[in-house]
Image (cartoon, rainbow, N blue to C red):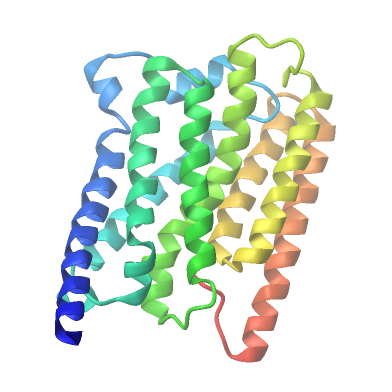
Length: 267
């Protein structure tokens, strides 16, 4: 009976491995499919059209390339036969494939349909899968390779999706010409930015993930730069800087504590 259970788990992992690889390839392929087919407007154009103080400078979006490359490398790594019974992959493999698939869907939806309620739902769903995955493996005794190739891509993606969700919500409000809650007004954008920092700080603390923090800090840095050089809104820039300091302080403390215990923070 135990042998049948092992075989069943191994078979499940084969399907997971295939799903993760296909989804990792899909998000790369779909990133430019609408440009190649000349359908809709690129994500960059959509973002520029709804530009407001929470939209980071364009350099920020280079992180998608790092996310996609990292995901693909990790997807290839987990194909090895010795990972068929990997506990961490077994626990969050389907969620990982789901995150990548939702990223691919978002890359097609936004150029064709724009930044709207559906795009918000897609990002929120992907972020939700990421958070549950990070919490699920938080207390496992992972090898360094598992931290790098299993948890790492999910953490980096989830950190960026946390910021992306906030920007998607505000950009969809701008695109819909919402006057009741208008992120073009600095005070409104400040409230959303404070919400992002608060949520990001809590998730940095509870997930204990270095790469989650790195992605969040990256987003906040380019929001700060956008408000210094593009929008000239120093209140937004100052709040973003405060968020960077908070996230860095939480991560630094966790790194120190994990070093004292002889245990590494996941990823």
